[in-house]
Image (cartoon, rainbow, N blue to C red):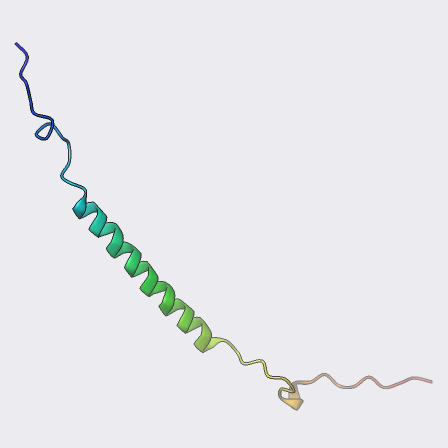
Length: 65
């Protein structure tokens, strides 16, 4: 004898809202991490200014005649 089960009771999982909320929260956490890494990268980036430090410039070449 075969039992009849309603389609809603035969489902394997729950409704999709909890999974959607987990995915949205994970996306928000990734975005926060990305912003943090970008800010950290800008903070440790050496500043390259035009003119710069003259002591770091290479010595001028001397002409040979």
